[in-house]
Image (cartoon, rainbow, N blue to C red; front, side, top):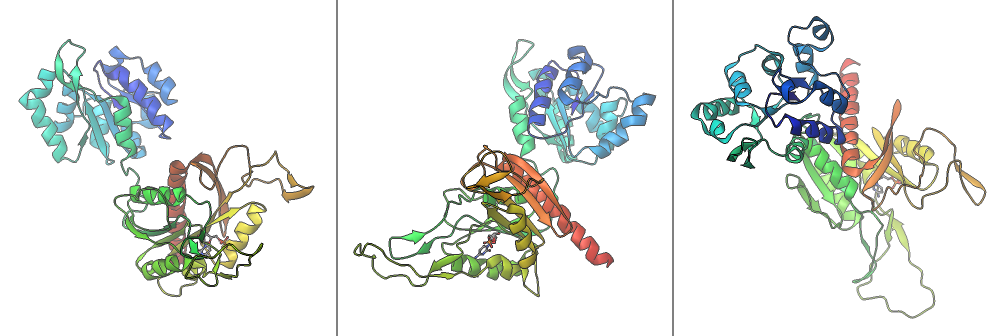
Length: 422
Ligand code: C5P
């Protein structure tokens, strides 16, 4: 974040806090006039990093000068962007750290203008804005309202919460750019008769969050979904199904067109051997249902000889998480498996039930008193692949999905690299 010298600089301090809360690492550059409004110490405390202020400072040039800062950043936000800073950037002047950083940056650049309304409307400012837009810069705001100078109109810097929300919706790091991802999500419904079915507690939240994260990472996404109450991401191709059989057919008909398959659906393992045409009547004290095994979609995808995508499965377990996850990884020939606890949460490890140890104390995720897994907004995952594993700690499913998507992109790239160099 680059802060230039306007009264709105005080709002940028709050913006740093909000961006960090969203998981961003923020480094701050200030112009000399910005320092007249807010002390660098404020930004240092909020960002957790020293603030950069000088272009020609031997110490800072050695550590993180304008070129290293430009290379380091995934995005450059100039907030507030004064009329002077906008003019300098649009004309390619480079006489201080901020303007030089702008010239050196090849990442996406966002500017949040802040100035008196007359200065904003001045034709030369508007020309500069048009020039920056034509150079690919994104302009956020300004907003309308009361100004520090006592006037009213356009020119206030947009509110930090709005700027933060805008940035967080930008595909800043497009780790799946150009790739096609097929995701299965939600539960399946296996009918018994015209009114009853067997299903499970899956809400589809994890699969839908993965679809959103993959889109954000630049992928084209096809989402094969069982019945859920969520709205599908607008930019995904949605195929709605009910039964495991339908999900199998939909996935198998689409998989060859995709580079990655993520099986996040809670597919029924068994479905009724026959579906009654009429409602089963309540008569005897007991009835017996005959269930037959469904086709394993994940194993069928991973077993493809041609056009096999990078295949990622899920393992929801109530016990022996690591053992079952690794068994599935190998048995189903997967590239990765994301494992999580489901069911009742338990006491402190070692986990015991009726005197029986359920899992050894290890670095695998432990069931804690925090709610996670099925039908929850939070989850934690232990991800395994043939040569390693990674723990993704309990967090909001959207954030977890982004972490998992970048791990999938990393592992897939590694696999492609190994194949090419073998
Ligand atoms: O073997 P298990 O059902 O526990 O493995 C879970 C993983 O397998 C999940 O990724 C799930 O989507 C997938 N699966 C499947 N087809 C089935 C059953 C499970 O694709 N019939």
